[in-house]
Length: 199
Image (cartoon, rainbow, N blue to C red; front, side):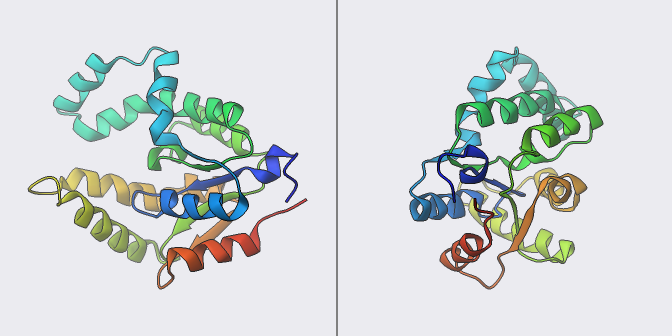
């Protein structure tokens, strides 16, 4: 890998909720001696750059539109964040928030596709090539995490994650798909290291 070329030394991890992006990102960053950037930790600052309105987001979340409406409201801000994060964090291992690689709006998706196109190492993490099985595994994993903090898991969130699993956006953006079921994070990291595009 050529550390002077941010297109080859930048690793982008995409995928649904609970796919292991942050965990694998940390291991890859350590193995490659690169810094890690988690998009979810930086997104609010980028959202604010183009007028994110917390009051409007709260209103939408409490309306009949609920979580789906909020996710739709986020989409232009997510697109802007992807574009900006790639500018600001070259030579990083970057793990995307689950929604930042899934778009219904063709124009927004085209912007993200253009932003990611030069990067050869865009890696989609999924448990299995069977998307129903991936949905089951990831939603069980997500629910087990959430139930530690709340009495029950909102079924709407699980349906959203199923959309993230099955939506074509992730597969269209990815240059490499890595299946993780039955592998430790360390084994998944090793597989990715062996399959990276290098210059």
